[in-house]
Structures are given as structure tokens and as C-alpha cells.
Length: 249
Image (cartoon, rainbow, N blue to C red; front, side, top):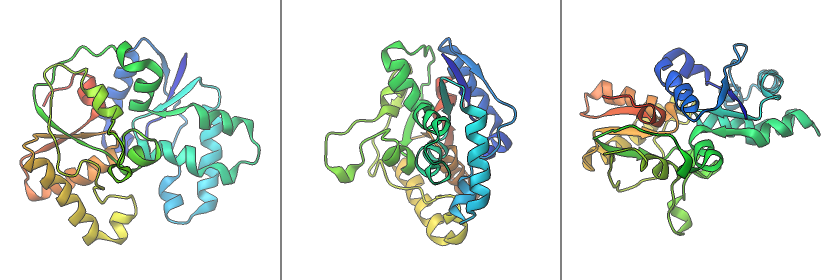
């Protein structure tokens, strides 16, 4: 299979190491991975701000760039959900978009559902207490885990993958699928609420004695990292791909 690697624009600029870790994890699975250099933003910030014309331009560019790959994989649940759930108004009976929509995956979803957990090539050790943050888009839109409000047996694709890592200690959180408060432009327009929600999530991890907060959306981790750095909280953040790639603290 040929995989097109989609890296969200903010990650490309602010978290290049996480982007490289994503590529490494995919290559470790023996995949043919390409990173199209012409890619830009998926359009989510523009869509959130009501800029439909700009969003349409980016959506059509995205489809044109990635339409010929067997799979499109990205380390961001929110960007993947943008493509899958919010591009449709710009495409009427378009085969290229339908192809892209059905073949784009968040990386944990791809590893879990396409490669399969039992086939994963993950030979790393991470001897630390880790708390898993379930981002809203990944958890509730992409179904990476079971939302607690459904009151059905719990399952988490991220946890299933992390359990393949040697020596990792996944802590139990009090509220394991609560929003961190980032929400993209929400954190700008509703700063006080966003900060309060972020501090609540960090406190839950600290109270559970985690030394690392991990997750599948760097945007959520970025939001909490900013609060951690500002308040000097005794905890760090790492994207799940960094753990799977064998990075250390």
C-alpha cells in the first residue's frame, strides 16, 4: 500500500519532532510512505471562523494532492475529522472526494484498524506513568474510544496500542474523556473557560500521579502544555507517536 502522510500545518511549524516520529512509526510497519510537499492546511481554522470560501479552496487542494494514495494518515484526529465530516458541501458527487473521505485515517485508527494491533511492530520501552487524554474529535467523531455518556462497555483504540509498549504504566483518570478546552478558535474567543477546562484536565492527570500526558491530537496537548509551562506544573506532554517511536523524556 502507498500511504500519503498528512501533517497539520501547526505541527509542521511548532512540533517537527512529532511529525518525524509519525513518519518513523509508519515506516517501522514496512509501509511505502510519501510526504507531499505541496500540502498546506486542511482548512479547519477557516471553517471554525466562518470563512467558507477559503475553506473550499483548501478542501479542493487537499483532495487534489491526496486523491491517488491508498491511504492518507495524519497524527491529528481533528484534522482528519475535518476532511471526513466537513468537506462534503464543497463536493457534489465527486469520486475523488469520496475516495479521499474513505481512505483518510488518524494514525492510531490506522494502526489499530488497518495494520491491526497484533501485527504492530513496536519494540520500545517507556517506563513511566502515563495518562491518556482522549480528544473530543478522536473520541466522539472518529470513535477511537467509547464516550462515557453512552454507558456501554469501555474500549479504547489508543489504550490497546499503548499496551503494546513495554514497561508503560497507564494510570486511571477520574474523568477520562473530558474536553481539555482547546477547541481551536474557542480558546481565543472564550479564553477564561478554555483555561479553566485545561487546568481541570491537567489536575486530573497530576492527581492520578501521571508524569506524562499523551494523546492523539497535538492541538489538545499544545493547549495543556502552554498551561503547564505557565504554571510550572510537574508534568509533561508527549504525542502518542513519540512514545511508539521510542522517544524518551
